Length: 79
Image 1 (cartoon, rainbow, N blue to C red):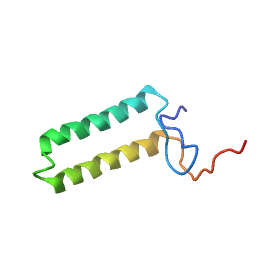
Image 2: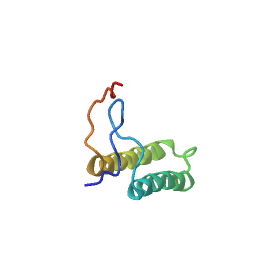
Image 3: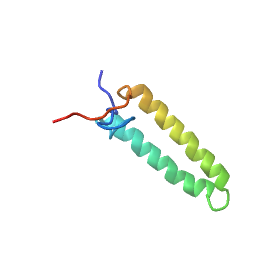
């Protein structure tokens, strides 16, 4: 199985995508944030925009969890 998001070398979580599918997910995330800026108008409705960002980020984390390398704390490799 090819992971879309490899584990970070140091710390916990995922690193940059290594497949086109992973990059498409990141591009979609950024595009949806951009669309949300125009559709929601954060200066007028900051609470709704914040909720929108939380929702998008939760979806991104769920995708990373499903398609990424299992996260665990990493201290890096010693040379």
